Length: 260
Length: 375
Image 1 (tube, each protein chain N blue to C red):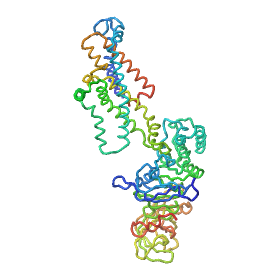
Image 2: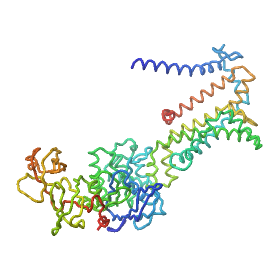
Image 3: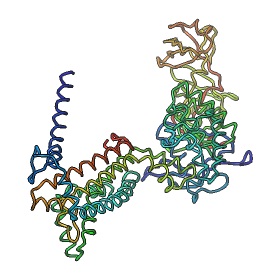
Image 4: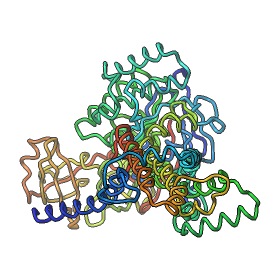
């Protein structure tokens, strides 16, 4: 028993270290004073952070990524909520087929998905980053929201909604007043998954950049030309933002309910 | 409110099909105002489906009337029904007061009026002062009472209870059983409740509907159903019964003389079934209706037997009795003085009053449906 505990703890420690080391390297390198990415950094400085804010292209890309992520998240939540109600609460012909179809974007390689949408939108002469990337990110986020919200809905007894209905609430009011508040952890988790899926996507997104570009694509473009630690500085800021969001979610609904 | 004697709930040929399978077939019944109806039967008999048809939760054929209004076009939330669910279904994110006041809020009452009625409902179920507690912090018995208060506070035309006591332990169950009866008598609300527990059904119900395989086998007062079961299934489901095939040998005035092959002769009252000599019948006798006496005085209508085993059960002694053909019957004897004289191996006579012999014509055949009607 003790041997197992010791072994399990060592493996856990190893995994945590393997996950943290790249992050430490990125954060360390971002603080470097030299012109090259180096770890440990030679000299401490915040000049690469300053450089990020001096370059308008990063700010523009960040704003666009934020807009895309918010749009894709809210739309995918609405679609995910409607789909999970249909899939969990009703039995209909082709239910399994619909469930599989909603999961299929996760099975297709992102390069293929990006290419396919590129061809589709080019043929249709729709050359807007907002429409193209918006569609792509929605396609990528919906499988997550459907899955997370379905799991949340399955755990809620139908009798809760029936109790609301029999005592005088119509179906919609029962859903809004009883079901939705009790799905809060699921809604928070779905929001986080959808947002991160959209905000982080690079592989498929690079095919659909026309008039405006996203932050990951912009970072990639910068790193192709320059080799200074600016990209490390951006990455560090993204890490901090992510940690902040996770901590807030934890405070609000409890992390185990979000991830579990 | 309905005037006394009027029908609060009426079902007219209600059927529910899941695909080709009938979960309910052709149920018709009337429930007078202010009465408690128990829907009793084994699991899968359709009792919950029947309750849910009244609530409007399952699509069905036939018509449900509440008061005198047909409910076909009335959605569940406008039926003015109060309902207690098997898992109570309290809203976990709300306080006790918000839970109970939910129906009033949906009816657009003012906040002050809601608070006053919630307090009144809490007092009715004996939970004064728990308004601000969260529903999930309550014990099982308290949750039950809150669920009951939530259902009653809207002054429903009908109260539906779906296995309301099944989640409670035995002691609490008996306490809540009398609580529900007290509250129902106090409010006078017409009540339908589903149970698979026959003690619960007998104790609570004014009328008892015994269901099996989606059909209503018998509807009557608990006493009627227990004493005059309409079918062999009812006889065996409600209360224990010793079952036996027999042949009618002779009709003598009010009695029929029945021969239990290899066992002996007994007399049965002729009232329930039309009997003819030589007819094959099924006989059911309740264990508590058998008198076990020492084999002293000869009696042509007593069945000879020997005591095979005896079990002390507190309220009574349960005797296992071996009949002449080596089959066994169970008899419950409450009189400890009589019981103590009957050790294992004692030869005894079994006597049954003719009125306590339940007879069905034919082997395992249902009685005429007329006996299932409320007088």
